[in-house]
Length: 68
Image 1 (tube, rainbow, N blue to C red):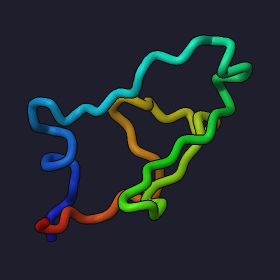
Image 2 (cartoon, rainbow, N blue to C red; image 1 turned 30 degrees about the vertical axis):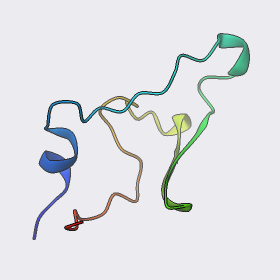
Image 3 (cartoon, one colour; image 1 turned 45 degrees about the horizontal axis):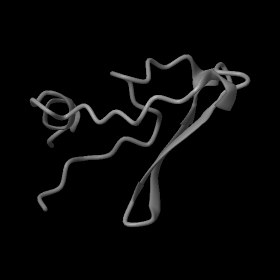
């Protein structure tokens, strides 16, 4: 079984980061919903209320790495 941690997070250029958001867009940074879509389907969904580190953490729902 191949877990995704090394393949998904351990390579150069594999840390996608969005543009910087102004503070006015996040009135409560401790309660922001985060999600990841692949081909229009939600694959992961989480919230900053869970206390996860956004840069290196992952919300629940991480799955295996598949070829292709």
